[in-house]
Structure formats: C-alpha cells, structure tokens
Length: 178
Image 1 (tube, one colour):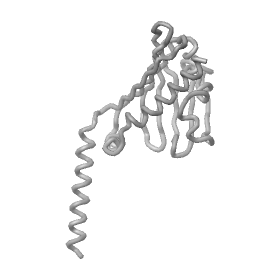
Image 2 (tube, one colour):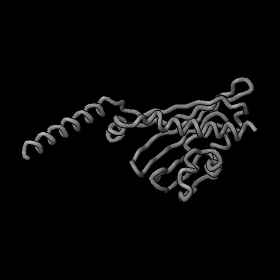
Image 3 (cartoon, one colour):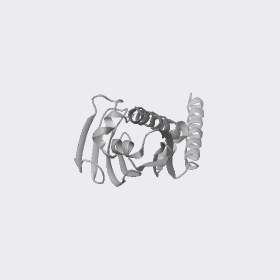
Image 4 (cartoon, helix red, strand yellow):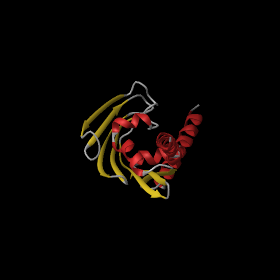
C-alpha cells in the first residue's frame, strides 16, 4: 500500500511540475482584441460605450447574472464615470472607470476585477470611420499574474473573452445599424 501511495505522490508531483513549467512559458501580458465593421457613424456608437448606464443595452456581461448589483458614481458619462458591479460566479465583482473619452473615436477604461480573481486591466474602444461604416475595436490588456498563467494552461482566455467581445460588438451593430 505504501508503494501505491508513493507512486501516486510522484505522479502528482510530476503533473504539478508540468503545469507550473507550462504556466511559466505563458506571456507576461494578457491581450484580447476583437473588431467589427458597423454601418453607422462613430457619433452614434460612441455614446453607447461612453455612458455606463447604456451598457445594459449591449454589453454581453449584463445578462449573465440578472440579479447583479450595479453602482454608478462619478461623472454621468465620459471621463470620471464609474461603474461597479457585484454578481454571481458568472460575472464576479469589479469596477470600471473611464480615464479618457476622446469623442467620437476613443474611450479608455480602467478595469479592475475583485472576484473571483483579482485583475487590473485596461479596456480600449476605438472607432475609426471607413466610408459609410465605422471599424469598432474592443481591446483589453494588462499584466498576466502567475495565477492567470496557470489558468491559461487549461483555458484559452483569448477565445473565452473574445467570444464575449464578439457578442458585444454584434449587439452594438444591431443597436446602431437599425
């Protein structure tokens, strides 16, 4: 019986070592970017992003927990606007603050996650007119702490977060093209 326990302990130690080595090879920064071409002027899209009160109409995260608690503070919109949320395991808890709002082309948001894992990132929305359409790009970037790197061994964060960004951009497209 002692031999079996020793074998299991060695296998477990090797598995943990492999995960830690793989995690150490992951990049030091996390960056997720998605873009969409929306047949609407930037000045029709910009207000939907620049005002956190309007995120309920397009953000993919707003419907993941119907009981999520939302708090708005600071400016009503634009630079200084703050949005905090506290929800279930699907949305966690966090806070966003608009740091820059260069209408109608760019919005920079400080994005802090508190639950289920702490993370500090920057989200940027850029709107670049192209003919009768606007190319909208949603990017999130920030440091990848070691726990994030361990998660990336098992989960493709770009794919997981990117799917949400694609849904949000499609929602913006539906709202502004009609």
